[in-house]
Image (cartoon, rainbow, N blue to C red; front, side, top):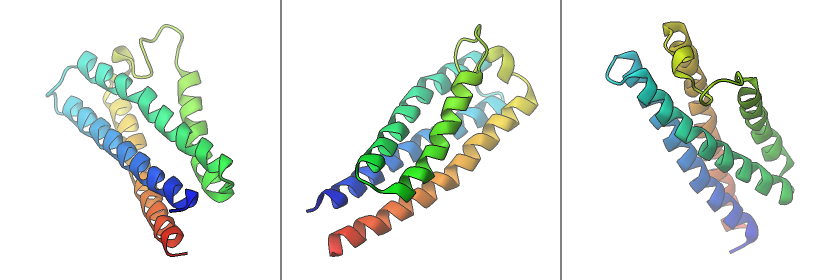
Length: 140
């Protein structure tokens, strides 16, 4: 098995984990929206998944740059830059990326939900790209 096939196999597993984290975040926000969970619990759960999501995605981006897959690197670095923007945009006194005082507004919940729903097709498209490239690397 070639290193390229191992890379895309790892990319698929990594992308599945990112999809699961994203779906978990969507479910958590929908629970907050329907008042099944209080704001503090929701923000604690969302903040616990933010850093693992960044770590998984940055690790994947670094592997693509070291393996000279430049188009995949450029595709993934856009989301990494978005994560950096969100991280550095937060206020100094906030408890985390998701602050209970800030997210309590209905419009903020909808905006955060929109972010997660936009990321969902990105991860799905990337999953199928990695699957195609894995099959191609195994055939060749």
